[in-house]
Image (cartoon, rainbow, N blue to C red; front, top):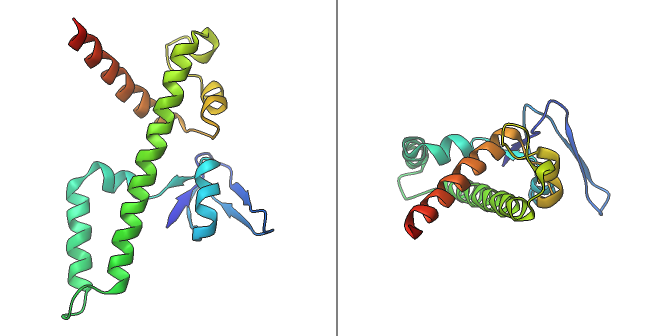
Length: 158
């Protein structure tokens, strides 16, 4: 699975086993043993956004994999690719849920420094609460969803 650094600098990952990996902004294939640490450090899965936000892209991927499979059935490679895509989508959803939970904690804290002058979450505060780096775009998406959820809850209570 490919990951990319959220900023313009490479993200360096070091495991307790002594293995290291640099994840550049352009992206790189990340071995399975590095993935948990990469996500914790803020690395972003690549191609998840396009698959996740576009059902047509997911359908096209399924068709492409089906066409490349041998006549006897799906190949192990296509099953692995679908598993990787599903795992990455699940990881992205879990990450978004963790960000939304951190945003809820920031709202409950009533600390003005947790938010910018224009009302957006402060990335440094969010990083401290969430425990990992969060990109501005990722924060804005989660913030918009959380605000919509809170608006729906308010509307339902009235």
